[in-house]
Amino acid sequence: MHGIILNNSNTSTIYALNISNATGNAVYLINSTSNTIYNSTLSGTSEKDVQTNGQSNNTILNTTLNTSNTASEYTNSYLNVNWYVKFSAINISQYSLANTEVNYSNAISPSSISTTTTGEDGLSAQFILTEFVQNSAGIQNYTPYSVNASSSNHYFPSTTATNYNSLYLTESTTKELQINGSWTTIYGNIGA
Image (tube, rainbow, N blue to C red):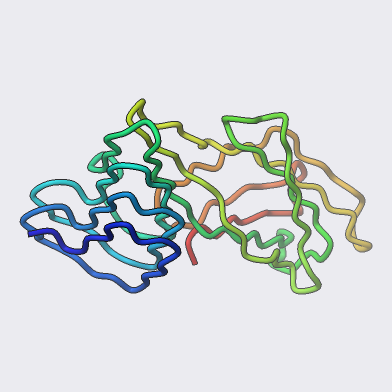
């Protein structure tokens, strides 16, 4: 028996779902589009954690699941797996760095760069990044993300990092990145 089935369902939002040990798919999406399942846990199913079928385009956001246990049966059936991301800029003394610019791009479109800037508290706004999109042709990974940061905090000279450590999105975790120079650190908080 499937955990949850959405058949011809559009724009549904499901959160805090906890499905384990289902005898079928944890989530089965049939001819359903623009649905979002977020802040959930899907595990231990006898079939797939998420299965899409027919004309479907749906999103799994900040949800624990076995990403190698998902399937999309049709070319026009898409599953998007996304995570929340927030950056925190601090110096080596653990003081927040306001107005730090963080540039990031995914592996699919490395020349398409997005930018966020930290606020007075050294934190960026929370945003959403894609781990992968799946259809019947396979999985298109958007990770790793290239992340570059620069700060012109008035206490320190401007320093820039280029092509900094890659940011892999696979689960809720904290990724630490350091701007060139020993005085500044950028933390990427994924999923929280």
